[in-house]
Length: 615
Ligand code: GLC
Image (cartoon, rainbow, N blue to C red; front, side, top):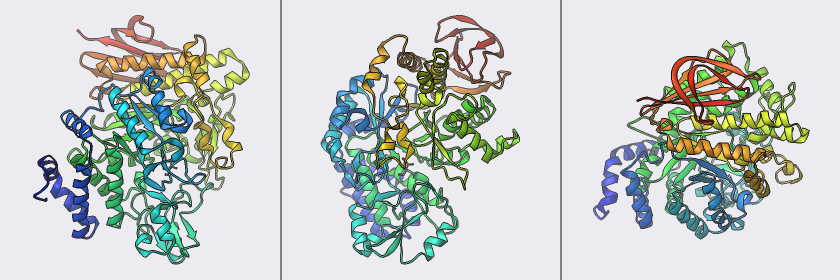
């Protein structure tokens, strides 16, 4: 605590001081000099924070659940593919608003070397925007416009690694030890080989191994992701200090949500998998405290793409929270499993665990994102159903790439290494639901089924508590973009299949009745509106899995403030009945028809949203 600190900052600092100091000093071996620098930096960044943002901090502090409710709808987009530049995105804010979206995740847009950027996830300057997209000033202006419209902005904070062209990497390459110490450098392959014994690979075919030889430094450097993404060493307090400053710099530009990219990888130790180590939780907890002190209006979104039981720990505990938001990756993967198998038992099992978490745990729900779909399912449970991991993954991949029976899905494999049998999957929601295949076949019945499935998946997304996040284009049934195969900089990475350019002519069709674009867009709009209006969708609602008496039909119940919702999703190929034996009167929110809920018919691939109002 410094006596010259202003009271607003000092009061917040005092609240967290002992825990922060304890965590920092434990991790950094009582390095008091580093800690002093760190706390001074926090104050400096708070002082530099614009008054408007400080006012917003105060407002959000007095309403700390501002992002939880049921009003937020997110959209994720690449600036370049969506509107060319940041200025272009500002011009498209009317469209974003028309989509009912009030939270936009701008995919990585900081400076990053062309062709060696991993979709922007190899940052060479955390303080500069990629010139072709605009300037930091443009980003600030966009953030201000968004704030005026009540739209929150989310940006990636790629903190596990830098590009090999970042200033620190350049100095490290030139032999400066101080900068080599910010990464993991080794004189020869002895240590890297020792690490390789226990560290799995992220990109086994597109970027095998976890180390890269750096010719200039004549040393090996740790590169968990691509060879040009150098892992930062968070065992070095200077790295933590400077990266925290970079995080606060972005927050001070008006970013509301910072997505902590590749969170589980932040700490490395020999003899471990280098994922989810306890020190990662200390780092994330410290960042949460930092936000609480400097910019309490800012949220942390953890990107934890891990096995089902490894995700929720990143919420921390009620007393020691870590991330405000986490991706609901398990539910996302389980959903595509459910589409392929038409069997809802695993989903019901998984949702029971999800619904048992404290309501304060807020997930960001999504059907797909910019990354591949990895098969992180609960294999223990599946084995009980007689489904073994390897053949099951093979089945899922075959079904979703359209190679199984008459599957209409049109996905592509990702990082298919036949030795590991662990391929993942790419594709847009519409293409995975069969819209692309139906259009190509010119088959209207097939199209109807595909559109229905796509709508049902969105309905499922909007049924869950938390923040639904749509991938830009999915609202108008964007299909796969195979153009990446002709681009030498992209062709090795099939994730570009579902990162295509926004097709604005296609988006226009949202206004034309009878098109799949209109059918999906209008259904999504209706569901969003209902979700925003009805407190039954609130994050504080009670949520449970319904017994439907039919394994093809998934049922979710919600109750809040005298409203009860029964949501039913039929993943089967036939129309079917959910035996709910509930004689109360319900209104179908999509058709406005009323009936009891004794035996509810649900069309093949369709859904029902039934609402009962208690007196
Ligand atoms: C995250 C991103 C992914 C990227 C990786 C490395 O998983 O979502 O796109 O390749 O981090 O930064």
